Image (cartoon, rainbow, N blue to C red; front, top):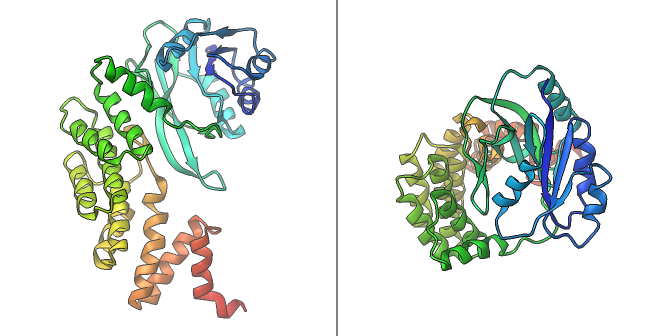
Length: 357
């Protein structure tokens, strides 16, 4: 059984910190909390759970803060978490079980769920390095959207960490960090360029985002998963500018990097639905249903693209075509997936309304 330190960097997290610390105390041997300038009761709450609370002068670099937190750990392994994360009891039990019977390993990867429906079923999930051997070889890189480069023996576990987004608006915080570095003459790494383009997109600077995504896609040293996601984000930028032609071409470009993903195929279906080209929409939705969801590739995964989105739209397509048997088939499929979804409830009334009245 290995010892485990849970390491946090925090600032003004009084609303959520206790929630995650109540989870962590059930499996952590040590809790390390690094505060980057809180003005609320964050540190007061932290000290109820650990005496390892440290101050760190913020320098617009998340990696430096996380590395500082790791440097204060004394356990065999480090686990990183954010204050607005949450771990459900079933996943806490999985962590405890893993601690007791873990093989020799260097890194453990968990699922990070950052989007979910009302029943906490993931709608946006990706795999992240979560537990790392405390041997001094694992260092955080990148000032924003920090990451640890994998090495050694990794294990992949079906354990979910849920991220409940803070109600504190992020705004252009990350964008400003990138722009400050660019103004100083720094050249962005492939990962940084990808995330910089995403920040431009999130801040509705679509033309700049498009230029940056295109520059990123021309790089030979970029990770394939980021390239596929860049094509999807690029398409969304074009859709925001009402440029459907380039939106579709951006999605098709992703086929150069790997087999088509359901996220891409469903988005193509969505665009063709908007254009009322139902034959092509049907084609891409059916292809999406055949895709296999695989979080172990490391990219962003939208589970609804693999089942619910194609099913609910195929129901509409077949109904409008007069093929009620197929329409009902896909209605029932989408109903099994999300029985309380407004579109499912609407369709249920269409199919069964008279019978139930």
